[in-house]
Length: 267
Image (tube, rainbow, N blue to C red; front, side, top):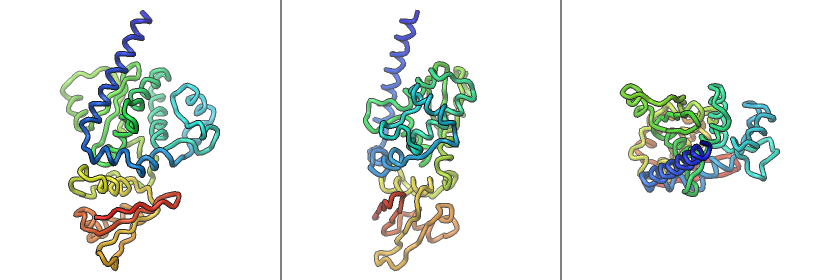
């Protein structure tokens, strides 16, 4: 019987990897460029934070040793050791444990969400970015830890028209929001055709997350009209600024980030 279970697990993992490939193949080229860009990977994977306020060091170390959490070798033992994507995953783990999901099942959940045959891509990374930029997502965790992620709209339709296997459903933004305290996730910056441009996605990502020191937006070519953005939500109090962003009619934008990083986007 145990051999049959192991075969089923391997088959499920194989099917999940195929699903990852299909999801990747359906993405617009611009989104793939954005997802794999140096700035996105730096922001999600290189900026490290602490998680002491979420769980005790003893529990965190236990989950690391159990392969529930991942910490790079050079970050082990440090206070700031979790990148943003791992911290979002940690938020999910904490909530799942409240519902009694076993650690062994969460190992499978992690494999479904984080293991990928495509370098620099995972279902969790894609879903986090897509949830921030465009579509609210629902994460479904079934028995044995297998998962499904779909838009809130699609989940609502299926939930009312079909009988679903036993699962817990988690609104993905609820676990993203704590990592971006200055976020503007509920705001619509009305930038058209965002998914057709890596530059548009990049600016929208930082406007939505609010995870920047400040932004300088240059309205004209002579750089005589420069607007300073220190909080994304304040954009909606300035009609000219909002219009310039939504119509993509500015000339240049400089985004100042942590570690003295400056990102420049020109139109």
